[in-house]
Image (cartoon, rainbow, N blue to C red; front, side, top):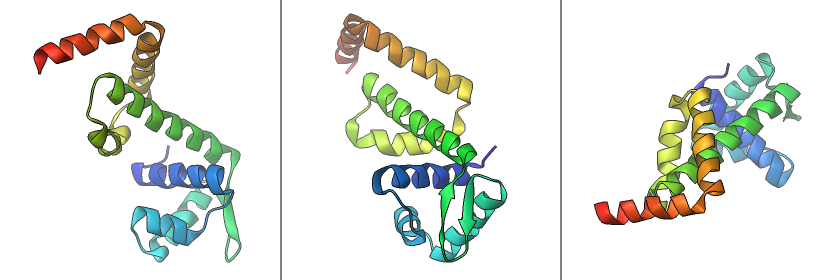
Amino acid sequence: MPTPSMEDYIELIYNLMETKGYVRVSDIAETLMVYPSSVTKMIQRLDRDEYLNYEKYRGFTLTPKGKKIGERLVYRHELLEQFLNIIGVDKDNIYQDVEGIEHHLSWNSIDRIGDVVEYFKDHPHRLEELKDIQKRNE
């Protein structure tokens, strides 16, 4: 299982591959605000743990294992954003809150949060009731 730091890299690499079609060390370093040498060390570690294939001076790609983890991490991030939005967290706080909690929840908790999000999507009148409660409690 990847560490939280490894997860951050895998999630970022997955997102960049999906949007740009490629990833450079400099893209990762800039986004995570770390030195390129730190990125290279993590890339080597991810290669060693078979999350990606790395060829020195040529680049890297996610392995099927890395891609599967990347998809799951993106799902977790998006799900937590949806959940916090549903329960009324201020939009300005959502991204930072997700970044703060996503590595500290079990996959079981993530799955249950997914159930709650699905419930409110399937029962929009319940979401309106929740918003009424929140207005009363302000």
